[in-house]
Image 1 (tube, helix red, strand yellow):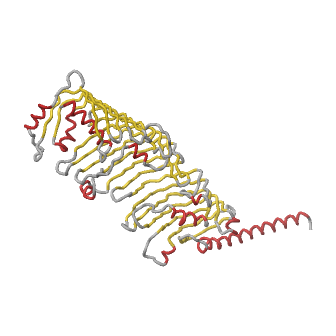
Image 2 (spheres, rainbow, N blue to C red; image 1 turned 180 degrees about the vertical axis):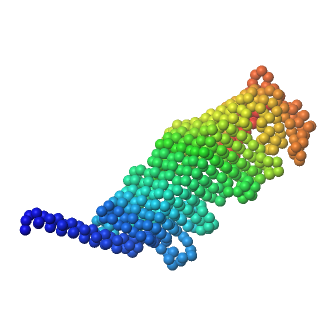
Image 3 (cartoon, rainbow, N blue to C red; image 1 turned 90 degrees about the vertical axis):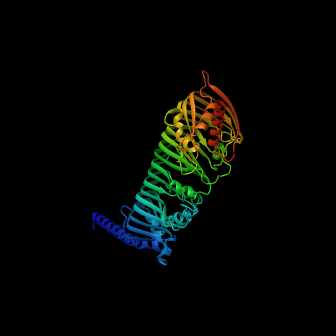
Length: 520
């Protein structure tokens, strides 16, 4: 036999051996996969699939129509508790043949999950009772079945339903997720985030979250990638109308309605150092915020201590630092109502722009720069208002400095607040009012000065607020200094803080004290 025939026979033999080996391994792996997925599945969840295909040439596995549910659901088919999922298809790419054959684990480069629909039924109304449950019940056991370096998820959705109310407390749709460079080890499983990854991208639409019985949160779209996050069409809304909301309050409390077009966070870094969460960002910019704060005086007073912003930031027990916060082209409305008979008093702050620097908790710091806040807006839709405010988070006395100027203010615009609230209306003009206060948790000192003209007051009857109390009006105007003259009037202010009232009450009382000294 010639050497060429021997070589040809040898090559043909090798070829047929490879073919037979491929067929044999392919057959064996197809038989082995159900054993790994079912018999050697130590998770609390059963996995079923309609069809599975294996290719040794491309080292890929493709499964269609997967169903995941708790194993105990088989014994109790009516009660739902835990994760239920339906997945259109899963593709596992570049799997390790050796690990699958001899170690009973699918170790691969990537997994592509298409159109997963996940529903979590859980007790209570909290989104997450214990983060450790995710590690012990889901990630750690599934890591023993499938271990990959990259995860790609397309068109996913997640619902979390409370078994207590049978209503969703969290919902997110059209999820696109990329996690690359994943590392899961015995060490990472002990951490708060039980895996490390080099890169992530998350895009999702239509997020709904119910943090408590009183509010719901919606976000139209979220896009985040490594150090960047963008939210569009954000809203934080009450679950009830004002009357019903107030009836449910045990104590006096603000009701918030907040909407914004978009918010961007740049150059952010977050995670856990050991067990401690941290968040840092270069900037947070919110566009077109529409914020309404409503307070009813019907519930009984909340007599708990109200902390100033130094202390509130200092109470955050993790490292938080945002270099710059901006609120642009926005609107703030404050409403306060004694009862529902006359309607609320309203204060409007239009064209509202805020810039704050060095927002942080000061956690574990010995020294930090002052928080500095600048605000400019139109007060009551007519008058420019500018405010400069600063404080230091680490100052245990909670010291602050705030100063501001309002110009060309038509006092009649205050009728929207004073008439329903204190049965009073004013006419006249404040050409310029300036205030400058230094304060702390105990008291405030400073001054205000005012240039004004043609100031008149009109008082209304309590029982018939549409009718003027003419005698009281006449007496009040006799006591009122109707004009500041050629020079502005100045008043020094010294005031003790009421511990049960907020910073804004403290500021308003200081301003009101200066008005009282100037005008009467």
